[in-house]
Length: 260
Image (cartoon, rainbow, N blue to C red):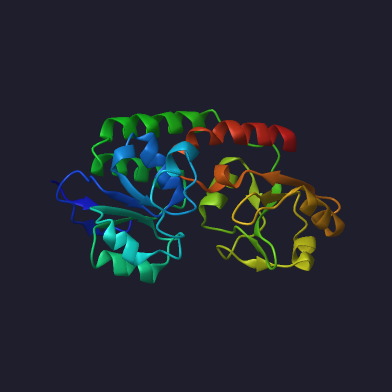
């Protein structure tokens, strides 16, 4: 077998095409099923919910940051797929001491496409992964960015308010949409109603995940941001990197038509 490197440029010792894969990243779990690896997937997290008809049948090994390490060991994986941001470093390092662990590091569309093709190579699904990556790339070429330079705040949490800032995958998606993130420094800073009012964004996006913002929260933001357009957005479209990217450009185009 060739030497495989993950997106942290670590060489990962994989002796054969994996037959027992554990994925601890929801969007990459969906990708594995898309590539036709149903029989090879031995364990997933409780947050791996797509595709629902298949994920419900697979052993759950905890949450993305609270893994059941003993159960993972018992499942005897020959490949674990993790992510630098979504998983807890200490737990991943413990797993690395006992199993081959391939770690993704994704901050934009090119790194997402790179992840797709590399996992295709590792799992023996090179052709299908290459076709998927090309279809995603072509889909984004049909994305029509916003004509006006709308300034956006993208909320991911409440109590305290937290936003997606610079150098994040969400920020990269906003930029592809032609939108300007009003938070330009930290990656996931906390903020306040006062700071949001001072920044005065044109649009406030309330994500469906990880905090499940709902219609009732629109009124809350409207009280201190009366001039802003406040909308609920599908967090999976903005933050899941994998086969769900096939649907993101169409979703973004529909969203942008509402904003303009």
